[in-house]
Image (tube, rainbow over all chains, first blue to last red; front, side, top):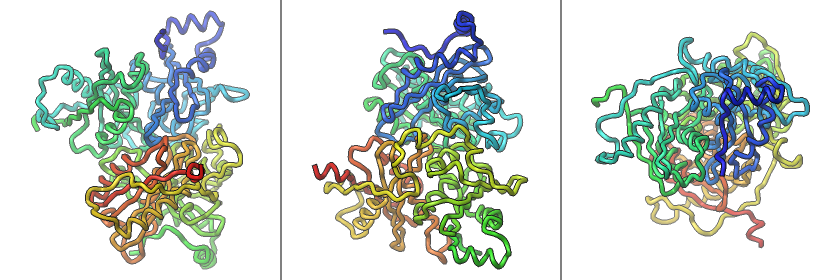
Length: 294
Length: 304
């Protein structure tokens, strides 16, 4: 079976556009319907796909993911999946995207975390006369990072290193002889150090392991409006799906790293989601701080 | 110091209007300003107040509430507090809305659950303008109930009854309870009422919570769902709004440590389950509060 495709390289995208005599942005709407088949919305059966273009010319896909058995705040929206996909591919910006339904307010807010958010061009393919319109029209009088952060603070997708280290004393007192666990811990810490959480100063990272031994990382992504923030396990699940992952019970290992004394604590919530999607997989949590010796 | 107040009765609103010579809508910026200190924002220190005029002439207040040590999706925005306050006081229409800062996208989305949301006149009190602008200007190309529901389905603030009844079996009992407790039954009834009023047409998983404080007062809250899913407000959050807004005058502000017992009622086969999240939330804000869950089912099923 073919692996689902969540990115199209700049070369291939250019070639596709040229063969249809379209510009890259004009190509995006034609890719939405096939992308919708990749969505996993067992609750609503309402499939959403967002097909985006980065400045580098790469095309990336985002789809919505729902988790039965849990409150709806665990849901991942297609636009959030798209931004995570940009991050996984080391893209630093989003030029435009085509989406199968008008982005909801939660997503219009989440998108504000990008620098230059106002200028992102959006086309809604379900409309009777679809046209590219800037995000500033979708969310005028916006509230965003600029209301809360200093001018020079790095925004989402911009390089950052939170500079945290694992605490020498293990949080759960487990003797650590397991190399897979070590790899997961390191991966989760790497994710934490890239985590965009400037509002709570509570970055966190998750690393999950599938039955083929592959590791997927997810970093917590915060929104200035708080509630649209995307949890670290959600981001790792996006990495899993975009990386070709199939059923969630293929996830056999999971590690969360979060800051000691963080004002936003993820452990209890990450456990709930993990239990719902892969009941046999246990979560290990480790704490970190700026000072390794403590 | 003035007691926290979250409703101004119609007669009082009228009397303030007459004595100041200002219309109700002209009064709103001052009410917003005096409500901002009521916000509970230990994380951001960013105080937001949302004030609404209902069709009854009553004025309602909402403030934002943050909860340290939990993920941000537990946060209650001022606009959500306001809508919950309207609903709990059976106000069926919101005529004017004034907010201390532009509503975020999450709230502009949550507001879509009200019929005629696009036409709600909105005033941002920290802007230069004193004009009301309709909500449609804040969320063009809206996504909302009309995209997912049939036209005749009741929307938020409209009367509804979900036709639920409690099952006889007890789903989950907190270890510290030895036998049944008079208050538990009262809470069960209140939580079921709240579940029956719960706006959850997307998941068909209505739920309700009832909270008991140390003075024996009961506060109830209904789960309120958003078409966009994530902005949905949990039933415990809704009950906390009732607690904060309804806490007796003369006793100061409501403190979570005052809560002694909580009951959640939700459907046995719900696709959206609140129990574990409610437990996590309560153990964080009020560790000594007992928590019980009782399941319910649709009366249609029982009859069959």
